[in-house]
Image 1 (cartoon, rainbow, N blue to C red):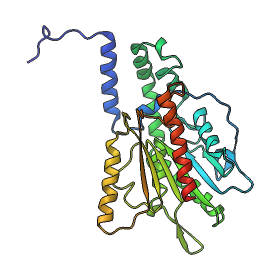
Image 2 (image 1 turned 120 degrees about the horizontal axis):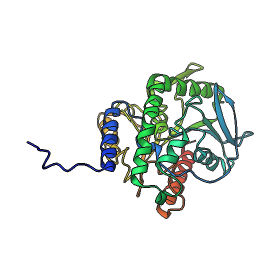
Image 3 (image 1 turned 180 degrees about the vertical axis):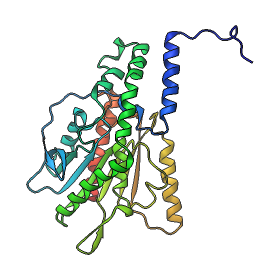
Image 4 (image 1 turned 180 degrees about the horizontal axis):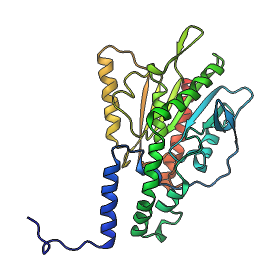
Length: 310
């Protein structure tokens, strides 16, 4: 039995951390990815422009005249307002080979950037741990409401409707790739499932032809990876607190079991990033050599994969 004499009174900081812990545990029944609200906002001037494309406001960049193929980017929960996401699309388009679409799959309702500013300011040394967690705790209720506005059924429909319209409008000779990050990584993978194939001119075709998924969150295993019909390249972070590195082993086990059962699978690739903190492909700190390497190598991973399969 515990007594008041043997239990020291927790400090204000400890109480805040304890409250935060229980809030997060309670919220875990429907998690978007709490780690996604962390990260550095890159510097740079986006080169594309926004326009309506297949029913969604879309950041468009790259070769509009004679692209080798199309790349669709499904962002993390910060969506179009986060400069990082536009700069990644620009990086994909830089070679001149690709037309890149970055649709607003959140329909004008991404997680506000001010949450990132609270959790990880430009100069983290000026923010105490107490301020960091009290700021996060203050923003948690609105964050929980955001997830309730973006349930899986509707979110899936928004993504699927866009990809179906894009596939039907794209000539057969042109291929489509999809890159997804964190929240968007899972939806990119699902776009390559057999169950999402559509019929065009009497032939069943996948929504996309190749996928790159970087720190994909909330994967449902085995359902999200068992019946893939397109090649997928995964990027995992060794120190990812939210999308744990053990997820990679679970995905590999599903595919190994499917092969043993005689199922023919497209090629799968797994790349591990170190340190690979969550968000390494989008919100890594470019002033930190290791994190900058993760940012640059994840762009190379995507371009190499699409260059091979599109």
